[in-house]
Length: 143
Image (tube, rainbow, N blue to C red; front, side, top):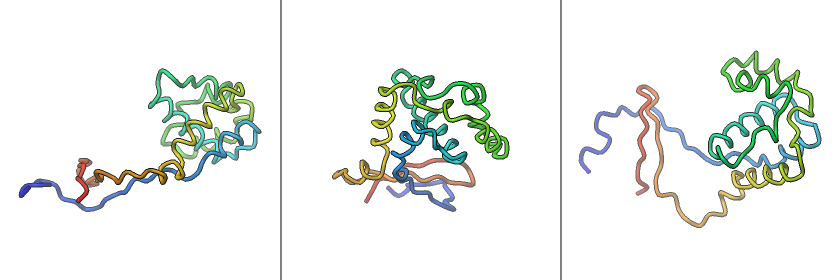
């Protein structure tokens, strides 16, 4: 592969690793004890789950009221607005609606925690890099 990476000007790489152990988010949401910062992480996690599981995950099992009405703003890049909204969300607006919804969320959280990822015995087959200057993404095979 003499021309591997031709035309790319690599200036940085980013390694993606699984998120930290966020299993406690489900229980905190159920207990109504999420902090404003945790609410934002929880909302982003729910949005990502819905994106990855559009037919399996019902967002309305996890959001209502202020959270549902301001969903797009909570996911926006306007950090001051997001933080202010998170402060206003009452606990019930992000509480899983049923014990079944809580169990479902636990299942998704367990799949994305470090324990689940680290238990894999299969080595990585590739590494994804991002050229920050051009925005181009390349998947490099592991040597």
